[in-house]
Every structure is written in C-alpha cells, then in structure tokens.
Image (tube, rainbow, N blue to C red; front, side, top):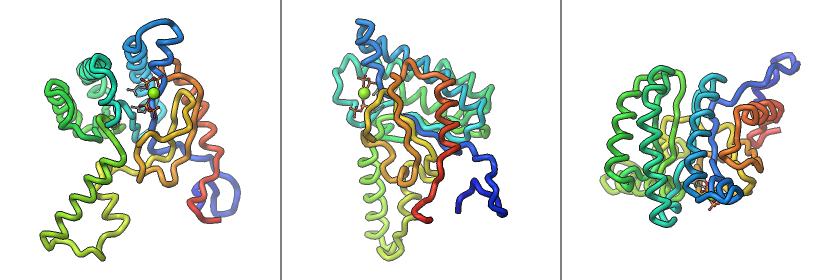
Length: 245
Ligand code: IPE
Ligand code: IPE
Ligand code: MG
C-alpha cells in the first residue's frame, strides 16, 4: 500500500522517514584535501555527528543509525583505530548530558566486546543513563558488520534447534529479524551515504531490503543540516512500492 495516497486517491503529504541510517564516509578525503592527517578529518567528522543528531531530533526522526566503525575498520593502522576510539569515548562523554536533556535514547549495534574496556564502560554508562528516553533513538553501529551480525543470528538459532527449543520449520523472516542486533528496531526507510561511493560496505544487509538509498558526493565533515533536509524532501517525493504495483 502506498501510505502517501489517501483513500480518495488524492496525494497526502508524504511522511518523514521513521528511521534514517547514515554511512558517514569521507573523513580521510576531507583531511587529505586540506593536507591534514586523517585524524583531523575524524575530529571534524565527529562535530558533524553532533550537528546531525541535533538536527534529526529537531526534525522529529524517531530512529537515527550512524555507521561509526565497521568490523573491517579494525584493520586500519593502529594509530588511526586508537584515535577513532578516543574520539568515540569523548563523544559519549560530552553528549551524554545533551542526550538526557533532549530525551534521546542511545543504543548500539555490533561486536561491542571488541571495543577497548574504557570505551565499553563509557558506552555502558550512557546506554544505562538514557534507556528510558523516548523522543529519539540514536543507534551507533560500532565494530559492526552485517555479515557477522547474520552469523551471530545463525549461531543463536542453531543453538536453540540443538537444545530442542526450536523446529527448523518455525524459522521465519520475523524470527530471523528478531535475532539480529536490530531486533526491536524498524528497518531503515532511508539510507544516506556521504562522499560518493556506490556501495553498502557491510552495513545492515538484511534490514535495507526495501530502504530508499541516497548517495551524496559531499564528504561527511562537510555534510550539513541543510543538505539533510534537502534529502528528506526528495525522499518524500519517492514512491515506495515494496514489490507491489
Ligand atoms: C569514514 O571516513 C569514517 C570511518 C570509516 C571510521 P573514512 O575514514 O573512511 O574516510 P575516507 O573514505 O578515507 O575518505
Ligand atoms: C564504511 O566506510 C564504514 C563506516 C562509515 C564506518 P569505509 O570507508 O570503511 O568503507 P569502504 O572501505 O569505502 O568500503
Ligand atoms: Mg571511507
């Protein structure tokens, strides 16, 4: 059903996406263009995160998922990985108050156990402090990979079958979805990738089956609220068919 048309066939105002997911790419290129080191790009990128989180909260987006660090990103030089972990910890510390004031619930997807213990502690504290907040879900994909998420789900289901708690025939799409990190999170309506690459890079593989995709050439540190609003406007003009006519 096209939720944008009313019963009498006249077009109703298209709705905002409930869930926006962003592949925040291009920090390294932003720095390179300015003859700076990659880490300066990540620093600038983290201030973009602050402004986009604020914008989404004000616009009324219910779920914002940010791809902050992939399972593959562990293979970057140690110095860069350490800098990203430091920035993450700093972000979690400095934003906790803002998340509380603005009723934002922090959530996380990924292999959290691989994060350094300091980051894990700060993360745990922020998750706990914001767990009853209801205005927006800020979901950080950290040490996240879509394939490893699927492997994790398969192992959990296989274990249940082995213990006699589950029949293979009872494995449905809903059951699979319910055993991913995103169990109680709706699928993204809109996926934005900055800095022009036309690829998914192992992000939310199962969940984006019918997500609308926008790729912008803008590098993440240069991404603004204005461009986000422009993309949201374009999203509202798209017709989502979900395989029907
Ligand atoms: C995105 O920027 C940040 C992370 C992946 C952590 P990049 O660091 O990938 O920037 P580019 O792609 O090299 O420009
Ligand atoms: C995707 O960006 C991961 C994040 C934004 C965290 P990458 O820069 O790691 O992806 P590739 O290497 O361009 O596919
Ligand atoms: Mg990149």
